[in-house]
Each structure stands twice: as structure tokens, then as C-alpha cells.
Length: 156
Image 1 (tube, rainbow, N blue to C red):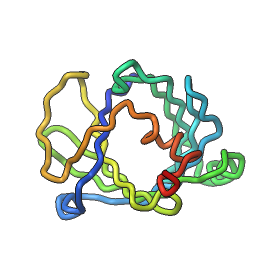
Image 2: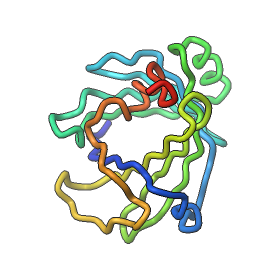
Image 3: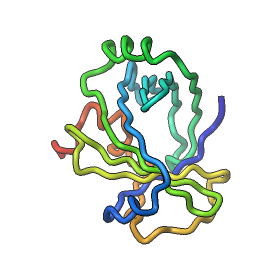
């Protein structure tokens, strides 16, 4: 259990790909996407997780997170119980000093959306902004995966 401090940004172009040191596929669904909590099933290339996230603070940067690795076979069964839209995306990892950007390139009903997230140690922590980083959308609920699973980017 921990509190995550995270900021989200739109991405201006694909320049981050050449800076990436790793990429992998993600499939995820939500067993519950209530505004006070989400319960997510996520499968990556070689692992699966059950994650519970609490409601964000007023700025949208801080929220409770609990995550546990589960067998992939069980995660696939749980995905069948998830809410309507299953999210599919490719995640790229880009190191930036002591920080790490996770850039998600969405597929399917959210194709065309690219979001970068950076997890920080403190809410006001400074970090270097790469040239491909666009408008900050931290706290804008429509960019949360739990909302994208109900109101797809392609329907905006």
C-alpha cells in the first residue's frame, strides 16, 4: 500500500519513442470504476495485477494505491467480469534523470490518444520537461483510464 504522486500530460508527437528504453503491451479492465475508488485488472507482457486506487486529492496528483500481482490465468478470467470497454495500449518507458515517464499509446476505441505520466516523490517536485511533453491534464477525469473505459476518446 502506498500513496502515489503522479502527473499526467498529453504528448505532442512520437519523439519519445527514440528515447524509450523499453515498451510492452497492456490490457486492462475495471471491475469497479466508482468516483471514490477503482478496482482494475491489468495484464502486461509477462505479469498480471489487481489494483485498487482511491479518490484523488483536489489537484489530482495524489491518491491511495494498493496493487498485488496475480496469476495471468486468473486475470484473464477476471477480465471477463470487467465493465464494458477493455483498454489496450502500448506503454513506453523513458528515463529522465532520476525520474521515469510512462507513455501510453492507446489502441481500439481510444486510438489517437497518447498520455505521459510521471510519478514523483513530492507533489511540487521539479522535473525536466521533454520537448514532446504537451498540456498537463493531471486531475482532468476524462483522461483517467477508468473514465476512458466508459467514454472512449474517439467519441469526444
